[in-house]
Length: 345
Image 1 (cartoon, rainbow, N blue to C red):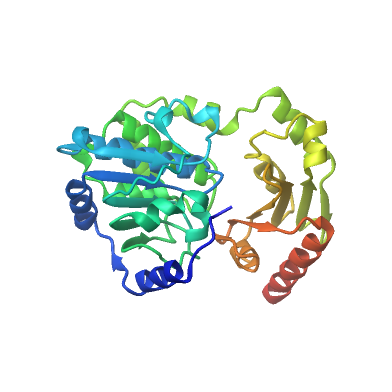
Image 2 (tube, rainbow, N blue to C red):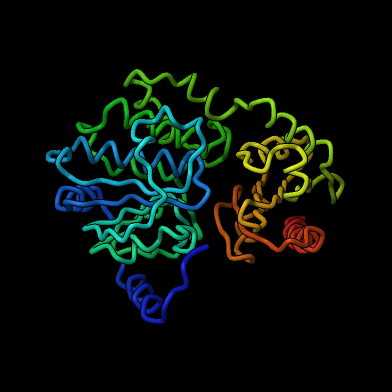
């Protein structure tokens, strides 16, 4: 959980939001060149886009003039081993060691609370930059660029980069982030610009096929068993227009999945024929319940539902933390789904 915030810290954050400047390509690179020490931050339970954008920034900074002499540290919670092929994954830290940095760069984080316990690095940094694509992001750094039309934070990051300092390692990170947040180019957030950036990454000789297969689609035996349980116990409402399911920690332990990465489960649910939206809830190791929401139609905006619980995201993909009363949660979510469905008819 994030550390308690003092009134002074909260006021500082409110002031920062009021004074936000638009982050441009020029300002981004100037800030990176000026800073001698830089920390890179993402959201809790980091996914492919979060990891890809954080490590993409790390490798890019190291390629800049004087970058090899800079202290650059990516901070994230433990990442899935399937992302270990990305350069810099071995130096990611989840420690809070009291270091103060010249610059904090926050990527793929919809709000300040989503940084979690590592938010202290942002609070203590001399200056900060925010790079994101969540339409619900209120902005919380000194300079920010939030492009709700972009497929991913990785795509936004690439548009800020000077291409002469992009190499294969950077391209692998950017491509990975885009692949994961577009569902391998299937989501409606995928635009021509997305494909053009992906194509540029491919030109660096990355193994794009393996990145897709090994980091997005591949599941080990235990994950397949978990997926089988989820699909076998999935339920529906509104004549199949809303599909949903959940799993508590007791069941996860029974299936040997208490420490398993739960990514990919919701995407298998959302592909149900006739479903306009899917909801998947699961208890996490710290005792909270995470809800992942996906929409297959423009008439259902799951970010609106997530915001009611303090979460956020996009129209077709969002997330939040909910109570441990699964039945109550689904009643509330179904009610909001019903309102949106009725309004569209």
